[in-house]
Figure 1 (cartoon, one colour):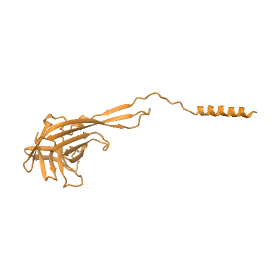
Figure 2: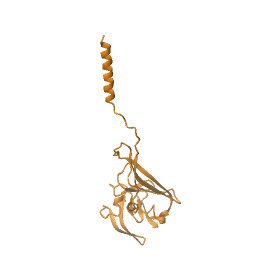
Figure 3: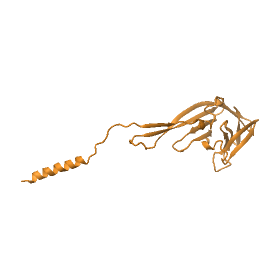
Figure 4: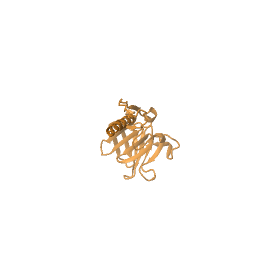
Length: 207
């Protein structure tokens, strides 16, 4: 006759034990943190294209006598977003890294030039610049530019009555010194461009 009472007591004890083991969840909403990392003045000084109005139009002459004139077509900017997961509240801790690009289109041909500058992206974790002549790309870490310790550093380069200082020579394929190449400095950008497939070298003549 006492069995039902014992069963009832057992059920009550089990329920109390289950309730005591449950944690009450804090449903208080947390606030995501946002931190922006814009390009610094030092980083912006690595290229003249975005800030110098003289570079709204750029002109090159080739070693075969033809001339290419490029006009500024567009400037785009974006932010690479990364969640570093270090927020103690468990909320997103978002880091925003500035990226920008500029595109030039030839006035007479189908050629184009693009320059991209980024602090950080999905592929790279430090500031870099990419110059593209049509579909030939030249990648440079930003701290290479003007650094005398760089492997292919050029202290002075003289062409067409102009002296270019603190330049670097960058190959499209870093392991192939016969590949396409550019000579670049922070004041004039890519002022000499050799395109292997065309067997042509283009030199900046304006600005």
